[in-house]
Image (cartoon, rainbow, N blue to C red; front, side, top):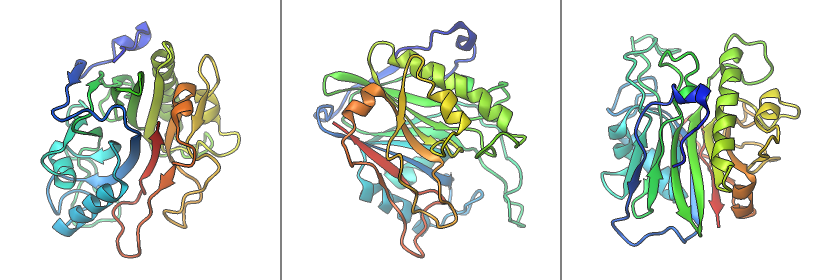
Length: 298
């Protein structure tokens, strides 16, 4: 993975050093690549823990969604640790890359609960199917603007696919500033935007395809959104949103997405037209408060 070169950010980049993962089975790097993004809603390592305590049947429901979508790469949010991922992906068949951010300990009491349950660690992560050769890059730790350890890092990998490099990042940006600029949370979200834009520009400089997916906590596709205008200023890289123009079907309360797959021009050229999909849940089988979205690259 190419490293972020901007001096203003280099001091803030900490985490895992780049490491290449060789396939243990025949490589799938020349096949179409299915990339999914999903905020799994407080995926804890143990049943009954955290702000969305799951039963064994709850973990199994998440596993069923993962199997149904059949993606090669998952860009994940709100994951406590690797053990939580193994509960839903299984003990084998996948390589996991967890955000390398120190555990901040028990968080505030869970909203709407009166049993003393507290927020557990929420990490970003990537799960990639075993057999796809890839390189892990350093976390984009500079997304933790202010460096207090409470804002989530970006986790990223590089995959050599169809003769070209694809750089892929999972993000979970600051919550609370879904539109406009009046929320007290907006300054921190706004401060994350140039950090992410600089990373995309740097990765795009040699012609690589770049995908950033996950929970942006912002209605980027709303006409005239200032965050999207800043992120996609076209200088020097133009960006697009997969499936733009479609509204979410996950929950009738929410008419606009906050989860996205954002692509640079090189990635857009690889995007299989019509491949964007949102997977919704049948009544009584809600696996998360977010629905997964996915795209295919050719």
